[in-house]
Image 1 (cartoon, one colour):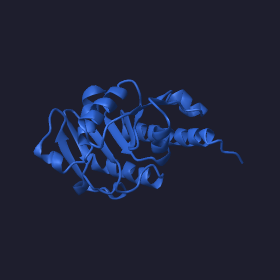
Image 2 (cartoon, rainbow, N blue to C red):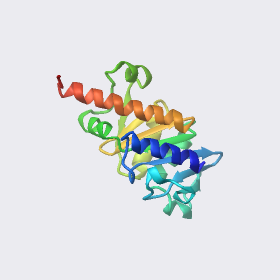
Image 3 (cartoon, rainbow, N blue to C red):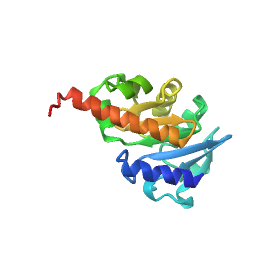
Amino acid sequence: MWREISRFGKKLVSAGLTHSHFGNISMRAADRMTITRSGSMLDEIDELQVVEVGLRRPSSLDILASSETVVHRAIYKETSALAIIHTHSPYAVVISLLENAFFEPVDSEGSYFLHRVPIVEGGIGTDELARNASKALREHKACIARGHGVFIQGTTLEEAYVAACMVEHSAMVGYLVKMGWRW
């Protein structure tokens, strides 16, 4: 599992969807999840940079796991997700500060595939964020934590990665349109 997480960690950083030390990735298997460790560099993941924790309740290993473990755990409990990516995508963060409850993509692909992206409240790694993100992801592929970043769920990391790319592209287009950008 760590190899798949490593592959997509590199892709996220090289695509500019997050910086090396920000964001996290997890995959679910039965009642366990493998998640990146707190402080790990997403573009340099190896078997020592992930930790396996339970989905049902916190454990002593949670202290090693990402600060967003509580959010990933809640999303897995409330959705059918098998993979979660959390990015700090710059345009999505900006859009979350400009919009209210939802971001509605104006580009054709974003509008078609994402429809609308909920903007949720809650501090980093808090129960509030866990509740709000897991609720939003019951019916949406992605949500944006206001001023923080994007949580994307999928059946595979590839599916989640495609949605992460789409959210950031649509947020960039939406921001440029909102700012009245002209050639």
